[in-house]
Structure formats: structure tokens, C-alpha cells
Image (cartoon, rainbow over all chains, first blue to last red; front, side):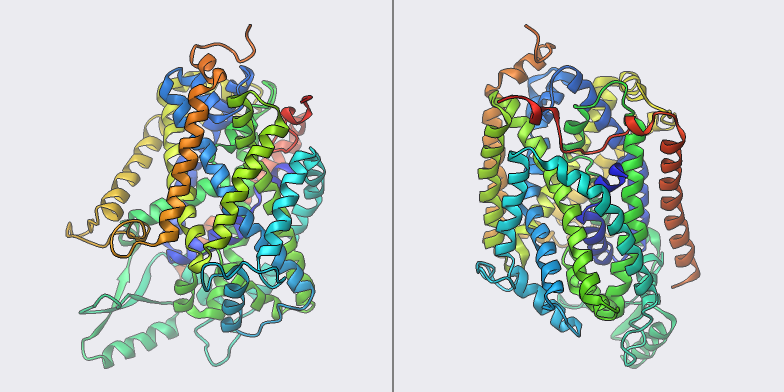
Length: 563
Length: 51
């Protein structure tokens, strides 16, 4: 139960539905399933094995583990990504965590009795400060800042005082309750039908179709200009209405079907699906490698990894996706969902579901409070890689390490909470760190495991203490398929999003807004500062790493505590 | 939802429920296994070391 509890986090109930909605479900779900099998599970196992091996030699941080296994100077610098990722993600994760507790208390105090999607969207923007930079900087309980301060102090107080084990025990009770509440919520969502009789196409049935139908039907402009985008239609009645609209358009509109293969040609979809697998399984985070380093040889890393992953997928696919996306379509419509996608989707939609439940304020508050507890377990675990790194790099104790990390993440969270306009800082950090850097680290890890450390040695470590054997098929998957898959997606993504090539026609296409936010006429200052913050942190960690005696010993093949 | 969509949904949800159920059965059904399973736990050994 503890393993299942620790696997549940905001990624399951908030990030996954937002991404599934953003990429239109269907093919995204297929890419997601493939990513789980050929990258999520193998890289997770690789991390468990490498972490425990390094821990046996006294190294607990990601740079230390890389240096001990690879024994080359570059390895410790590559391992820094495994510190940057959790530390930077913590800076915005703690903000989302404070949204959860803020929403919970506002539910319980009756402050979230909202009647339509316009109100929920406006309330979310007001609470988070999405309207403009600096608009969240108020000590009003209807805004995020006081909640963020409380959550931030609570996180570090728990760690500094070394009493986070109490929270862990509490979560053993709270997490099953979260799953029970999610099941109740799921039952309510699936019986919502079409909440607005005037809009019968906005129904839960069509929401499920939006998420799971492999083939998409879209209304497209035959001569589109820059603002014309394809509009998806779901459900027999909506498609009939779209046919009538197309026939009356005089050739300006057309109905087009996009099959699974057409949708799978989008590398951004693959990057997002893989990124979500990494994010929710904590694979490529640098977190598993650190926690595995504290495990004994008699512990079972194979079943630990599989159980945590399967519990996570159960919550994500079986609960998170089935609740939020169908409810979003029922209340916002298909077009509205496409426009509201992102981590905020659940905050904009779920208040409307709770409004249609008996004792909705209580259940709404309880759900967001449980989500807050799930988030606090995740955020505390995100700090451990940074703590272990500072301890090892500077040779200091845990309290000094926690203090240093507290100052750094306080600055980072302050940055995110100030630049809240369009949630630009959060979105930029989530892409460049929460997707891009995780992807880079995962690729490095699987290459190190399969090609540098060696499959045989890795599997020997993996199987010590294990009740089950990893199926043989994962040997070629780890050695060949996984790295090729990751490098292939990365190359296609780079060509499309950075170089602006349209891969279906070979012509020049549009560059991702994550890139245009950084360079050129459309550059955004918060986005540029966000990337600048990550670079400054990387330089700071590199300087610490270059002088660390522990990592030099690891490179020389010495155990940390060898005399 | 189309028939294909329904099939994809049932297969996906069925797979994750079955996999999780199998893991629970394996952990509980193997002697001493529950004590050998770990996750991202908070009380790491460095928290217990004297400063």
C-alpha cells in the first residue's frame, strides 16, 4: 500500500488529463502505452539497479552514481541533470501543490460554489494569478501566495526536523482514501450524461470518445489562414451537424478524418507521451536512482519498480484520465477542452462536477486535500536528490544541505509565483525541464545501463533479491530499441520544433512556441528568464561537482568510504 | 464513442487494472516479499546520521 501510495501524485490526476486533452486523446493514448512498455519500465528498472549498485559503494547522488558506474570525468557532469530536474520541478510543483490545498480550503469554506465553466476559468485565473505577472502577489486566501508560503515552510520543516516519516505513515491511510474518492468521483462523472440540455453534444459519452477514439474527425478550412485551426467533432450527431455546416460553406470547409498513423507522425505527441510516462513514474527524474541507493541487496528492485509503475498507471489511466477529460468535454465542449488543456484543466472542470454532487463542498475539499497529501509526498521525495547531492559534493550534513536547498528553491518558487501571467514561467519550466531535460537524462541513463555498464552486469544487479525475473525480451529492448526510440523521437522533434520543418511535406513549418518564446520578435521575458534560471542553477551545480572529492574517488573506482 | 474507441478503452483500462492486481497478488502471495518491496520513502539513512 505504501508503494501504491507513493506512486500517486499530481501527474496522475492533473498533468496526464491535461496532456491527453491537449493532444486529442486517441493516438496520444497509443503513444503513451508504447512509451510505458519500451521506455518507462526498462529505464525505471535500469535506475533501480544502478542506484542500488552505487549505493552499495557509498554514493547516493546521481552524479556520484554516474561517476561510480562510468568512471569518466564527463559522467558526473551528466549526472547533474539528475539534480537539476527534481530541484527545478520542485520549484513549480510546490506551486501546484499550493493550488490543491487552497482549493481544498476554499471548497470547505463554500468559496468554490461555481455554476458554469466561465466562472471556474475566471476563478482559476484569479487564484493562480494567470491574468498578469505579479497578480498573485497578495495575502488574500483567494489567491495562491499565502498557501504557497504555508506549503513551502511545511515541506522544509518536515525535512529539516526529520519527521517526514509521520507524513509517510499518514499517507498510507490517505492514499487509499484518495483512490476511494476518485472512484466515487468517477461514478459521478460517468453518470453525468449531458449536463446542459441545450448542448446535447457536450456529453460524457463524447468525452470518452474524445479520449479513446483512435480516428479523429475534423472540420478544416480548405484555404486556411494563420488563425484557422482544424476543429475536432465527436459523436454521431455532432458529425452530422458538421456535414451540414460543410455542405453550406460553399467549399470553404471540408470534413477530414485523421487515422492513428496520421496522428502518430507528430513527434511532439511522442515527446509529450514519453515525457508524461517519465514524469508520472518519476523515471528520468534522478529520484529513483537516489532512493534505490539506500536499498539493500536482499530487497526486490524488480517487483518494487513494477508495482510502483502499475499502481501509477492504474491511477493515471484508470482514474485520472477517465474522470477529468470526459467531465471537461461535458462541461466545456470539445473545442473548449482543446483551448483549456494543461495542468489547470482539473481545477477548471472538477468544481463543476462537485457542484452536481450531494455534499459537493465536502467531497471537493476532501478530494483536493488528498491530492495535496499525494503532492506533498512527491515534493518531499523530489528534494532528496538535491539533499544527497549537496551532502556528497560539499561533504556537509543533512541540515546544512537542506538549508542551502531551501534558499535555492525559495528563490525559484518565488520566481514562478511572480511570473504567473498565462502561467508562462511554470509552462516554460515544465517543458524545458519537466519534459526536455527528463528526456535527456533518461536517454543518458539507458545508454549508460545498456552500453557502458553492460546488460549482463545490470541484470545481475537487478535480479539480486528479486521474486520475479525480468522477461528476456527486455534485454534487446534496453540495448537497442529503447535508445533508438528515444534518439529517433528526439531527432524528429528537433527537426520539426527547432528547425521548423514540416515532416509530412518536407516544407518549412512552424517552430514551437517554446522556441519562439526564447528568440526573435515573439520572445517572452518570463520564458527567457525561466531558461536563464535553469542555466544559472546548472552552472552552480557544475562548479560544486568539479571540486567534489567524493566524485573524484568514484571516478577512480574507489568506494566513498575507502581509506 | 466509436466501437474502436470502446475496444481501445477497455483494453487499456483492463490492462492497467490486471497488471496492478497481479503485482498486489504477487507481493502478498510471496513469503516475506512485502518487506522487500520499497518505494520513494522519506526516512533515508542520512536523516538519522548525527550532524
